[in-house]
Image: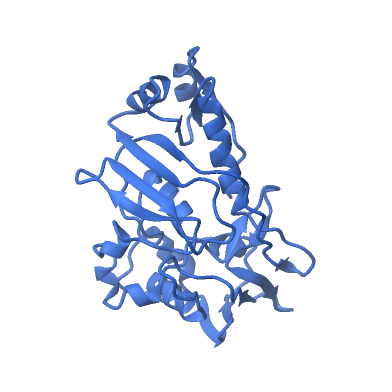
Length: 287
């Protein structure tokens, strides 16, 4: 991540703290358990502006096909699991995930204190629906391969079971995919990407929701989700699009944005060695 020097550095710190506030702790049960504990809201507010290269696509975690949309979706939607600050898998929309003795069935015990950004409760039906979309024959994104052969069953109002054909060490990571609200997508799977709820009206259970998208899609503004727990420190996050990475970096250097997000190659990082830009390495998680 790139950030303009001096006072703008504080804004970057605010965003990092915001993302950390969304991470819940885990303890005790195997393979994954924990009771999310809301943190006391710190004094915050203000708007954080991120410069990005390119235009964001579908604001729906099941259909996002480029990094800008994925970054926005990570602030709007949440999965059953997440990666904590220690780079370990932890529960998020699940309060606990239990693994059967044969290592084939993962039982997601869902939180009952979560609301969608429109005020309706998050339920097991939302989880069942999300994975039904991923397994629908008309769903052709690469993620579909992960869910072939997985049996998904709603067992109770707060429990959904996932049964595999063979053990998978990485399955908890697969449960990070964002859950979408069943009540907003009543049609066929093929209609979901074009729905306004996959764009300007997108809502999730995450810390932010879509406030506006400019007519040319060059600016996407997020505002606080009033039902998020814990509440984010920032009032808004703006994503401003530029035609190139150089343009985005120049916007930061000129005070038009607070940071440039994204993963840079070693060669790209070298081109950004300039006195008015600081490159910050953040730990990430992947297989």
